[in-house]
Structures are given as structure tokens and as C-alpha cells.
Length: 219
Image 1 (spheres, rainbow, N blue to C red):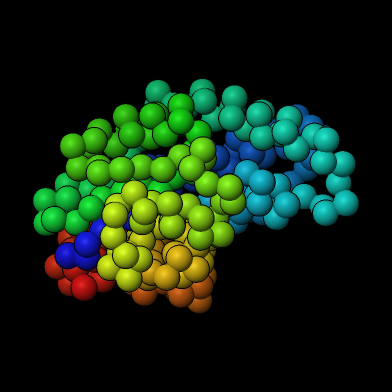
Image 2: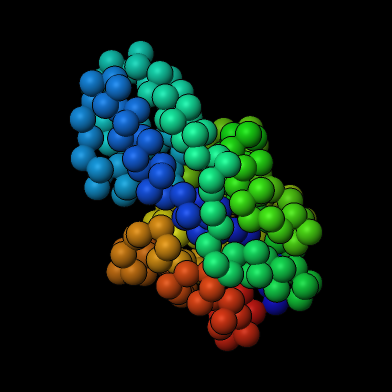
């Protein structure tokens, strides 16, 4: 196994991508911003700062940005107790941990949201460390989050690998100097992930677990 496996959480380990898309769409609607759902979905995986810039005009009145971000957080919090991990997510964490890899969650979620995600995973026994929004200045696709996770793992980036579901995950991992294995569970097309540089693409974490011995995680 690699010395460390760094995991994105939303859309990779926990089924949240479309919940985020719906909550962002509603947050925009509440502030009289009408963004097509498809555009919102493509931006999910970025931090809120970059997501707003990706889907809203550059010349917008930015006075509403904090309000839209807060509205998203309030709307999404309604789902905290109902979040569900993908099949195989906890087992994959335990398999990597059991083979000696440091397993780290690379999340830009706020602390309360991260607690809900970890509760859904129910695999704290196999998680060596985790990041949150308070650990980085700049969100994906900047490498800050991945670099913070590698630092928490206590290994060199060259001995680590990232697992994510979004183009932004692949790009952030590359900028941090490590390969990224991608999964399709966040709804991003395989071609987009491969074009971004993913070294392998699996249907979901259960499929990755089934091929663990032959996957890049074991390289």
C-alpha cells in the first residue's frame, strides 16, 4: 500500500453531491440569483468562495456572497442527521488502514458538517486524521487542502495518493504532487475525470475496494 491514502469525503465517501447542488440552487434563489442546476452541480467540490465565482457573474454585487453561503449552510444542515455513506466506504477506509496506510479525510467542510460526515461514515477507528475549512486559506482546486491532509498524514506527497470524485479533486491532487484515483459517484463524467488527469476511474468506492490489490492505491 501507499504510505497514505487521502480521501475526499463529499461525493466520494458520503452521498452528498446532489444535496449540496440543491441547497446551493435554493440559496441562490433566495437571493434572486437563478443558476441552472447543471451549472451548480459542475461546481460542487470547490469551496464556497470559488463556487460562487464559478457560477455567478464577475461583476455581481458581492455584498450578497456571505448571505448565500450562510443560506446554503443552513439549508444543508437540515440533512446532517440523514447523511448516508456509500456502500463500501467504511470498509475501504478500514482496508487501507489495516494494510498500514495512513488514512486521512481531506474535507473543506466546517467542523459541524465534518462531524455529521464522520458520523455517517462510522469508521473513526480507521481514520488517522481529518481536515476542515479552518485548516486552509484557499479551497480546491488549489492544493492547500490536499497539502494539509498530507501534512497530517506525516508522509511525503510522493508516497501518498488521493481519492476523489470531482475534477477539482484531480487538479488539487496534481498541484500537491500526487496522483488521484477518481470515482463516478459524484456524477462527474468519466471522460472529464480522465481528461483532468485521474490515473484510474472506478464506479464507486465499493468497486475500488473490490480491486484494491490491483488499484493504484496498492502501487
